[in-house]
Image (cartoon, rainbow, N blue to C red; front, side):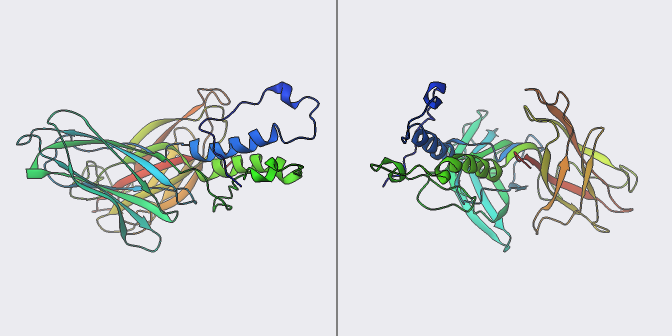
Length: 338
């Protein structure tokens, strides 16, 4: 009994579906393709271009909302950094932590000696398992001897191992070859339904980043704040603007998570995420010590149903009188079928 996971999916010819004999092929190929999809379906969980100063000579950190796979799978992290003037070529520290709903930070990666060359882009990669219950990441960068650097961005995408036996938390049920390879193996309805159910489970489990805005989690160092007297109280100030492209879709619902804080005053409905000319969703500024605020936003795509289907999205914040507020992070994901 073996769970076979092809390195690439096998395309079944249309002729194989014509006047089928009561045999395992092409059903076994289709079932194994579903196993391959478990390992090869890798939509980016995060695509982030940091909003930050370009020359930093101190510890830099941010918090980013996430909705990882329910299966507790591995993810590949790719950090983009630009080491600048140093003494020279001092190493960098890259630290990644996850925060679960139980509270507290768990370290996923803490490399304190990443080789860095002045004025040469550094792409640092590592693979770590993200807990299914993780609600946000904390990314921390630093450089030896207070050397300057520019945090540019972050990419995080699934890199799971091949599926093993047993139904997964996501609902994915791996196919075992022995179910069909034995002589006289039965062809039942479950075999035919499993590939479709597995495809639906995978698409719903692995969120696809559609928009992001991230700046430092420190109110001292955050690049942008909404402060007195920069803008009158209770007026919306746009802090992020971008285009979300979702090919082939028409009115998808985005899952949106927000991390924001205030210096004092009301935290209620301090952040808005909206489609330009369309619907909006409101979020509280509950601070950086708790789980991100979560909501949904249905968008009406321009060029709907085409490969260029898209919407313009923006994030805004507002303060109360005499106080400041900060939008630390906004991430929106597209979930097929949502």
